[in-house]
Length: 208
Image (cartoon, rainbow, N blue to C red; front, side, top):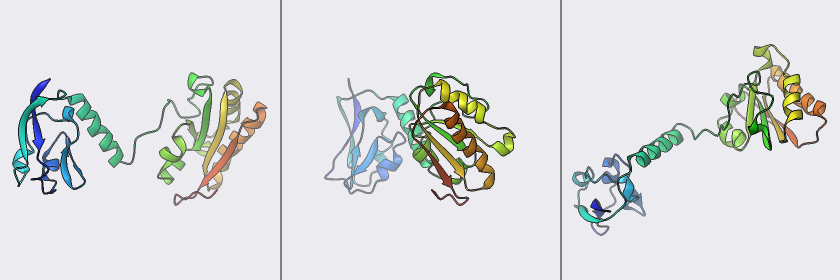
């Protein structure tokens, strides 16, 4: 479509970045020290960036351009906010509590299963990126739940096509219960699948 949209004269641009800050839609970015219109569909054509430019490098033109896409702009802002707040969630299924999880569910088929103590996600800052990514996650705390997860986990491993098992626990003694339940469940299932236990320290370090 032919519509009004901004044009940036790179020869006049001094690289101050004020236009990028003024653009609420984040259509403008700094590339190699110069302002650049990153996406036509992010530009609403209202020109909030024009008065911010000290060199007059930005003007309006009429040309063939994609229409302004408010939905795409909002999604971009959402993604940016999530990154600034610590990253995008890697969780792909619900529920995650061992007590609430079904014994059989489609997401278990072909899954790399993560069984984690509740506290690990709080102690280890990159938990989503390093452990939840590409895995189905089940969490619990034997001390708080006052139960043995072994039977439930045995049913899940036995009744589904689990490809691998990762157990993440804290270094504290009470986490021994979740490791014992997971390892015993794997043995009870009679299956031979790759498995590992990762221990996190109380100050957020990987110990093994």
